[in-house]
Image (cartoon, rainbow, N blue to C red; front, side):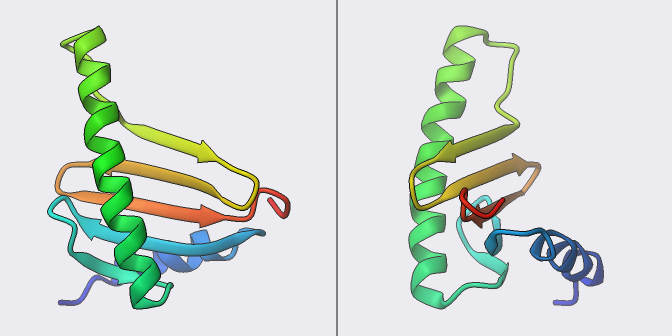
Length: 99
């Protein structure tokens, strides 16, 4: 599968200071593009998909007409941003001390 727009988007995101990895996956958790190794990619997708499902459910519980569009999680080592729309999820991992 060729996704020239996706490749350009990844390059643009990757050019930002502190970005350590970019993952684009289907809503089913299958990676389409990644700049990370396979083990890290699978780990981030599995955990972010679970977290995204729970956060989206919480948002709907609070306001049924609302939808989760973007998530940002910050720890000492990572800042993880995820945007899930349509059939895809984009996950960006960066070092919060470099951004």
